Length: 218
Image (cartoon, rainbow, N blue to C red; front, side, top):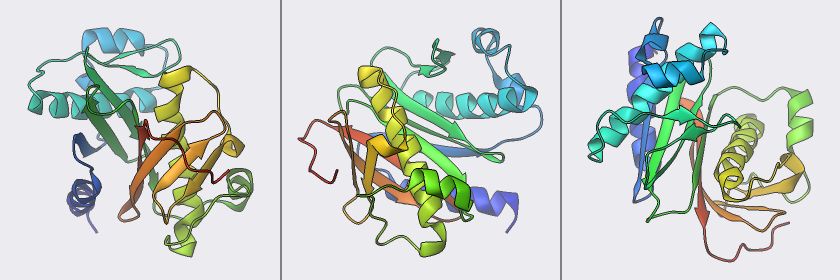
């Protein structure tokens, strides 16, 4: 499958998985994408490696496109001291990338408390990393076995991105429990998340914070 075809396929998969009120998008990372960073963004990312700046340029250009569709043109997406994106007032969002693809999620603060997104290649997770990610209580039913580790890793990354802005807590893999069959995750700090995901042509997981009481899967 060509790069263009993979981009179209992932864009369609993400459109199908997006819940109401949340805009998702993806963009291939290309040579020169670091030039897409606005001056204020580039200044905040000056110390990062060229490949990381390129991916950040692609992700921020994508997010600005999503924001423009929400009536917010030329938005600057800075970087906090913790490395998280800084969004315009009234907006929350999340950025992610692997070596080839950048993804973004945005929403209105009035609609959802927080979101997190992650993207990974649709390849098995190495065994040594899988041993760190899987914990008692994680349920990967409904996910094809070859990609269950990768999907779980991606889900926990997305959950962390959604939770950290809420309370500033540092979570590790054992602090997050995922149930793919129910589309839910909970943390040891008491946060509940809804999960939305696709597995092909890339693994993408979106975590959406919910104010509902988290169900007990810990």
